Image (cartoon, rainbow, N blue to C red; front, side, top):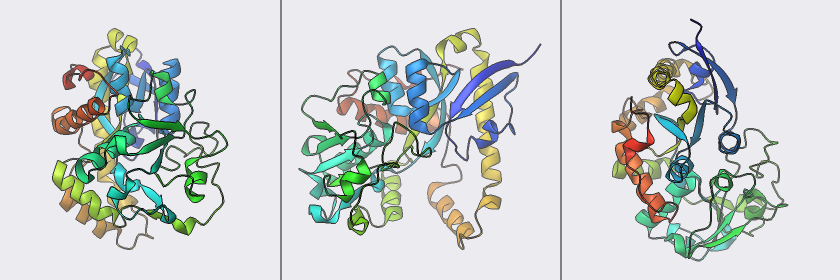
Length: 333
């Protein structure tokens, strides 16, 4: 019997690259891979539902799922970052520390993207900056955002505006039309990408005035990890419901292949550290000491605290009206 052929879309990532390159093969499955930066891939899947298997924004998947989106997830989290440390501010804005964001103009690529959820939650719970204290500006248009495809509406009581089409996060922060931004150019691996404009519209001004809100991003990331015990995930892999209903066994085989792909990536990591990173191996040893041997853990149980926190934040930020059970998001097998 020939292998089941499944289409899959995802963004480049160390932990999934062996699978996308064909070095790892799911038992009984032939994958037909498509690579796309995250925002483009999410938009395509939410708009056209064209792939059997797709990486999706964790937040947008949960939001869509509560509205009846017909997919099932695998507990495979291929991208993790400390999103709040990516915040930049303009030095003429008067911002010196996170508390100074109150009353300021804050730009994000997309309001409901997972990075924005984590960022707002961290600012509120760790630094006392409520989501209602900030004037939010969103870069992506309704047409080309995954929020636009899942029925996003700005929550009640939020100060919300859209960035003009001829501007971007980059052009507006450098010209001090925004006081702070996050994720500038996120998803812009493809410079022609219509979803993220910051890679194309850079703007003119004094870039030396654009500063990191957290000058020591490593120290701040370690603080977050020691408090919460996880590195926030931004995307997970999902299976189209019609595909899953026809071939429920494929979920387990795909999950096993994702595990093997991650194992291979971890095995070869020290060999892939660029020689120009003089202290690369020492740095890797130090990060493993802090974050453990498996900072990209898969599985529902290993990620329950992270998933529960994300669901709580989505509800708190008025992006879902009811909290789903963690188990209801994932394939039972």
